[in-house]
Amino acid sequence: MSCYKGKYADELIANAAYIGTPGKGILAADESTGTIGKRFESINVENVESNRRALRELLFTTPGALQHLSGVILFEETLYQKTAAGKPFVDVMKEGGVLPGIKVDKGTVELAGTNGETTTQGLDGLAQRCQQYYKAGARFAKWRAVLKIGPNEPSQLAINENANGLARYAIICQENGLVPIVEPEILVDGSHDIDRCADVTERVLAACYKALNDHHVLLEGTLLKPNMVTPGSDAKKVAPEVIAEYTVRALQRTMPPAVPAVVFLSGGQSEEEASVNLNAMNKLKAKKPWTLTFSFGRALQQSTLKAWAGKEENVGKAQAAFLTRCKANSEATLGTYKGSSSLSEGASESLHVKDYKY
Image 1 (spheres, rainbow, N blue to C red):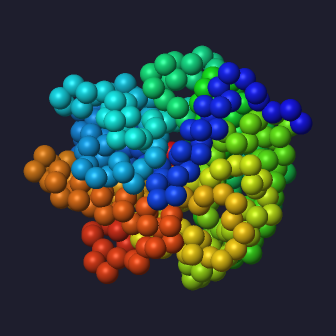
Image 2 (spheres, rainbow, N blue to C red):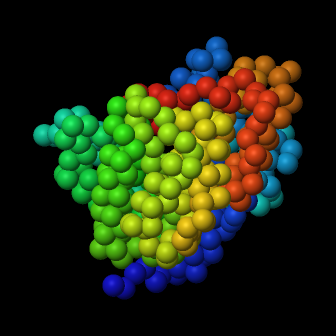
């Protein structure tokens, strides 16, 4: 198979490897305007551009936080925003050694003839948008495909359709200079056990890598953003060591060593759970040819949001909460996180939202 060897090949390989640097990970700050509205509602803050900008400035300018991050995923609005002092967010990131990324999908639509399964939209005009984002400073992209576990789900149709969509997106990004994050999220909703989640995860990842190969995607210039292998949200919990074992095994069986890193999604786990599970994977003695790191949204921001509550006078307190989570996850990528004895408000609460839309 000949994969992409175009003008961006070396840059894609270097940027993907950089994002996967051990000790660093990704802040997912690409909530759509609707989703950020739901977060704001929980702290009684109005969903207007100035508040969205203020929250993101709070995150990006937290002293010491960027050293624990290698990338930040932005929503289109945020890519072009500036700090209150007039400095573009993209410049703030670059100076902090962080690559700006961009969410490029247009959300999910129902797949006809299925039991509520979905496919992701956004391929139309994607090449042109990628060119604009690259010009604006973005160096990687994200596209979220969503699958669910049910009595007969995910169907083979949904698996194939989403795998092909991710592969089309990936090659279009690479042709335009952006490292694609391939995100096939299997929702945690349901009462299934961890074995069922492992089975579905392995089938989905196998289909994704077959599609990526078929589409001649340069695997060294991509990243994978999967769910951790866990029991369903309505099932009995298992120990972090069990999640680590099942998750790493699913990756060993399906994920080529050519891919430099896995950037896990938190999928509605509490901040602390997500960190502890990631740490357990990095402590696990097993063959792991890729870096195992994070691309967390809710699991990096929940206690920060609570501490901030939209008030200027709380910015310092909120930034301290954000730095705590950045440090915790940085340590978890090295397997050295000891757990937090004093969790800030919001760090231990479940962030699970049924049928989560981003």
